[in-house]
Length: 139
Image (cartoon, rainbow, N blue to C red; front, side, top):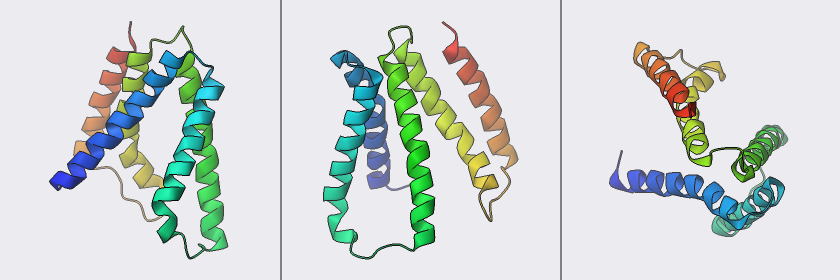
């Protein structure tokens, strides 16, 4: 990985970890938090990628992207609702989400068309991630 890629990853991780904490500090509902984040995200992405949006994707691609967008929207709503909930200890919650996100990637790759089965190293990594999630989720 290049330095630029690592810095990009660090920026994304920081932003993804920070917005629920910042949103929680605003003391709004999860619905407001999710809506503000998604509207702001849509605006930023549209402006930053406007020069690359000249050609429309195929209808098949649009359906696939729409399905992914709906699933992501549901996940953002649940994420924001959990982050806004005073009964949820937000620090461990964000870390558990992050660890699980990384851990499930090899399995998602496997079930995708043309996917590859996880390697032994990835399976072992998943087992360690499961232990980490268990330990992080304990209060």
